[in-house]
Length: 223
Image (cartoon, rainbow, N blue to C red; front, side):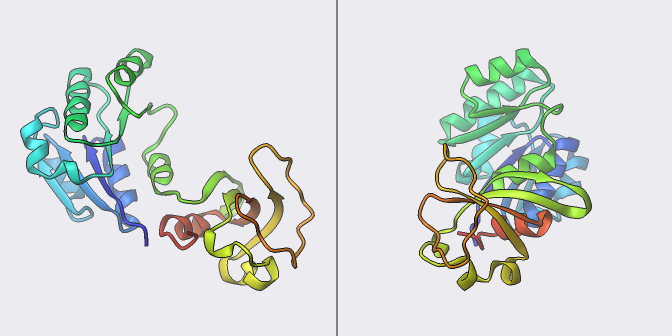
């Protein structure tokens, strides 16, 4: 199982949703906010929850934010607070910093001071951001009706050299492979040969239950 430590700084609706989604998949989550009521709402879900100012470096250091693989600055309305949080996270050695911005001006500023990625509530929901943080193999997913999805994903290392028939993918993962892509620039080949072994660098397109397959990927079962 692939376990990450992710900091969620700011626990409005977006931040609380993100913290809960990440916690569902057994990730270590550090959740921080100045509002005690918001911290209490997620305290039972996350690894660590604390009340304090996310712009205060001493507070961040005190809760161990430097342990995080990724930090999400989930408050988008206070630019000064977001800027200081990003600066402090960079000083504490966080390599991947995602920040929420309420408009294009905020977005430009946050990128300018070192955010790895900037998201906006119009484009990115808490669930979607959690999904992207947790993915290992899924490259693209299109959700259709009744939970069914078309998914493109890179072939897991354990599958290399084995054939579709040998792996019995439909039985083990409830997926139907409908195409193979040899590399990023090659057109999709819909002639899937059950006896042909998978090669390194190959991507597959399959029809599957999207929620179930995403869980397999998040939990590292497809590595």
